Length: 228
Ligand code: 5GP
Image 1 (cartoon, helix red, strand yellow):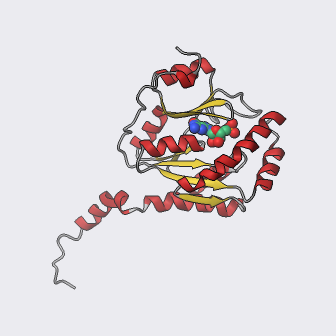
Image 2 (cartoon, rainbow, N blue to C red):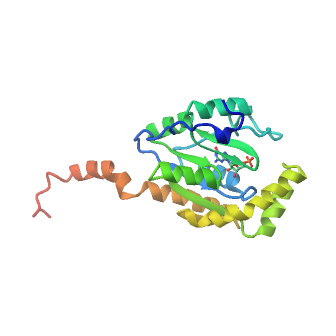
Image 3 (cartoon, rainbow, N blue to C red):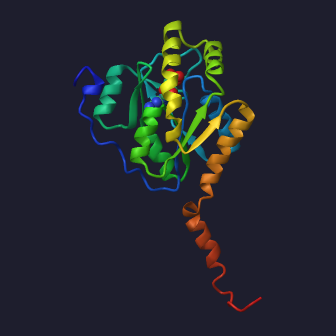
């Protein structure tokens, strides 16, 4: 195996995914954009939505739990998963490896549940290319100043990592126009409600209602056209 994950031969990604009724909801933002908080809030409003726990090679932060926030793995373990084709998508983000494992996504979709992927803009590009009906949402901070304040106040990164994340934020926000939905995170309550609304509205799309609508129409078949 090459020591450089980028140089590795890429196996086929694990698509096509099971055709259940669930949908992939990709949520991206620059680091400090507040997507984690918004997603947690939206999950309290909307039932039957899963959350994809990614794999990463970055070190856990204080309070982060293996299997809940991330699966924290070594670069070797990550590379082995890449070789095995275990990822739907993966990317190098701020110098670490991050990836969405197929298994959990497949399971949730097959059970008819929507699943949120909290991933970076490269991951969003990959998913868009692989899963046609994925729903993509970009969370924009109200301004660069507020992003910097939030990221600094969070205190989870050392100065070097903080500077790297802020430097990368420009290219990330510039990718907003590749997303179907854009939510400006200036008010957490409103922004979370908006994210929940996107998920709920996507569920009301006609193509997702064909089966249910078919059952309703079935009940009308005995009604004579002239009745009433
Ligand atoms: P953090 O280190 O702050 O938890 O995450 C850094 C960035 O990596 C964030 O933009 C986050 O959304 C992204 N990220 C987390 N998991 C994944 C993943 O599975 N795939 C990709 N492409 N990005 C991810």
